[in-house]
Amino acid sequence: MDDIKIVELFLARDEASIKMAAEKYGHRLRLLSYGIVGDMQTAEECENDTYLEAWKSIPPNEPRDYLYAFLARITRHISLNCCRDRARLKRSALICELSSEMEECIPASSSGDGFIDDFLLGEALNGFLGKLDEEKRSIFIRRYWFFDSIDDISKRFGISESKVKAVLFRSRIKLKKHLEKEGYII
Image (cartoon, rainbow, N blue to C red; front, side, top):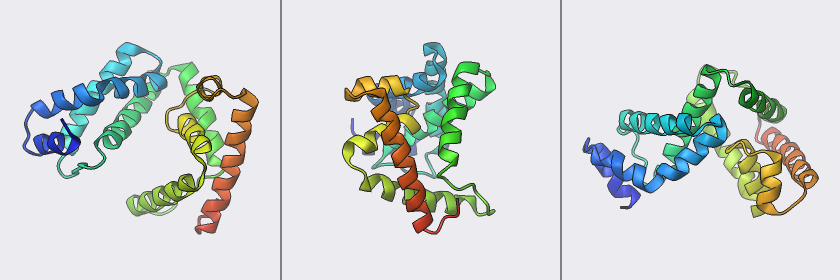
């Protein structure tokens, strides 16, 4: 079933929408969550919580053209919260490490109008990612969206760990310059 029909089922408050979303995206959402929490049972709980949150969020949101991205964002936030709540030291250390890497190039929120700021920052990030070549963009996303390890990324792309680190370092520098050019104060 296509995303538009699944969203229509959500809007009609038909419980079949959850089943259809799970059939189409469940495996991918579980893998995304597993990469963050490191435990398949917890990942399955996060996936189920995603469907509940989607049920609450549709409407007012109507992600007809981007259902997977909508569900993935929910899954990612639930998984991160679960990781924090359960104090998984090893995974928390990874999240802290990645957060500190990105703090060097992403501005902190300073105004009370967070939604607009987040939207504009998201647009600036998308503009930056659109300028990267496919491999660099994929490496950046695998690291900072999916929380893949340097080792996993190097195996996935068939490149050395040092090259992955260099690509990420250079990408962060370029991101910082791009955001400064867009008017953000880092």
